[in-house]
Image 1 (cartoon, rainbow, N blue to C red):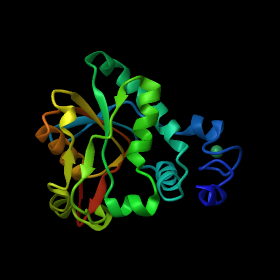
Image 2: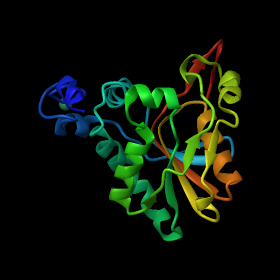
Image 3: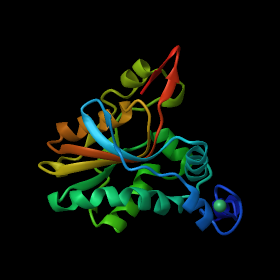
Image 4: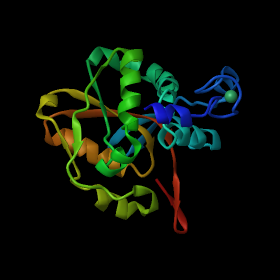
Length: 210
Ligand SMILES: [Zn+2]
């Protein structure tokens, strides 16, 4: 971790000024939103669309190891979860592939879920494990993504009977998210909602698909 610390940017992830991970000015200018989205049968919340700023923040967070940004991401999501506190749901991060995790050294969704748990008071449990290697989703079409992740996850039986809020850093087609929801259902849990920092509607071929 020490070497990683040396490589980290010393300033704000967006403007490079002030202290990391994000300065007050950029935080104030960042456009968050407050409406729900949907992927197949699962509804959820994304704090922002995949704007240039959001992409930059995700890059600093995931690829440059600026994990302290998770606290900021969580602060944009947490208000949406206060109404779900009464139903005693648990936060379950969507796992990354084993290879990606080995390269990065951390699981982005897990880091965000931990911060969310601190901020909204819901329990956090990394109940889903990858059971098959998943190829990088980024280069794949919507159909390929769905096939790529099919039955690639397994959830712990400990979530049986529990209402689950899935947590991820970014949602695109929702293929990974829906596989996570399937794994939760198979283990006897109830996926009720998902939350992510950013949502992107990716251009595929001649049209847009999400
Ligand atoms: Zn800044």
